[in-house]
Length: 87
Image: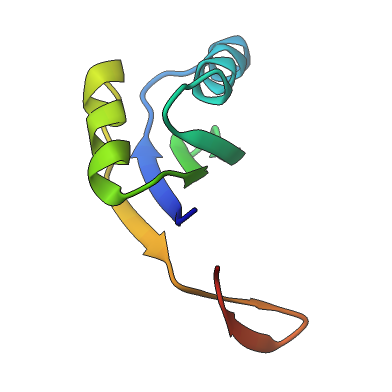
């Protein structure tokens, strides 16, 4: 299944609020979250998802009221230096 990265700007989020938001993301149906990374000082959240296609993920964001700054499909990645296609 295709993987996507999304960047979100968060306003005035506490650590407890971030934990609740993370729980909400991981309980999603129709898309699957793999990783949530947060920078509380800058108010940024980076999320790695699996979704059948971009439109499905965008529809989930809209249904959940999640704003995103950008959304990128992951086509290649590097682990230990070698660039390989993502399946």
